[in-house]
Amino acid sequence: GAGVSQTPSNKVTEKGKYVELRCDPISGHTALYWYRQSLGQGPEFLIYFQGTGAADDSGLPNDRFFAVRPEGSVSTLKIQRTERGDSAVYLCASSPGGRSTGELFFGEGSRLTVL
Amino acid sequence: SQQGEEDPQALSIQEGENATMNCSYKTSINNLQWYRQNSGRGLVHLILIRSNEREKHSGRLRVTLDTSKKSSSLLITASRAADTASYFCATEVTGTASKLTFGTGTRLQVTL
Image 1 (tube, rainbow over the protein chains, first blue to last red):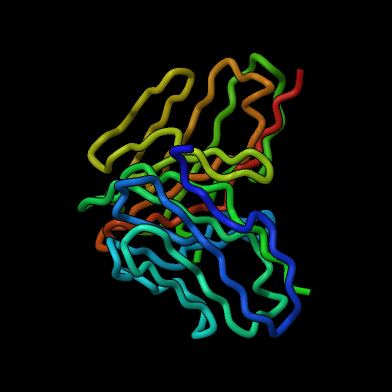
Image 2: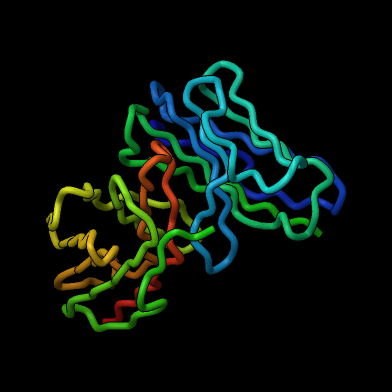
């Protein structure tokens, strides 16, 4: 498929555990975004990559959250010492990049449940 | 934080009627986009309108932008049951290039 792929689609974990969520963007897209969406709310910006570097990580809620994109393609969102409040759908999006934000292409999301 | 707020939060109409959703935002923008989300799925881009544009059309969609009032509207004409979804506006705030900030969404229900 040519779309944005996110794995796992569902993840259930216990409070205090470590979680990794993976995003495989559309081939050739240099910009990659992570958003978090709670039930009944709009997506909340977490971090934006242009290539391998995090151009804007102002949305990461605290130092338990970290994201990488080492080769400028696949990205991993890492959450340490998970808390029940981290439960949400984590959305990844990509775009061709450029000076202005055009259309974002979203994946289906990873639903994280922290028990 | 949410930059935009959609109004109404929920809208229920019958098939064939028009649906209008409004979005208000707080700060100067480069562009405003509308997205659609089916329950439990990812978001799909519908239309983008730049800050120097006032109106755009795409199929049954019509979007307007009033930068003086910091508001936008999305009109879906001749609605269909398949239009049932949540609709979000998203803004690229001036000075924050390449980051979209989403609103709270309007849940549209189209009944037969």
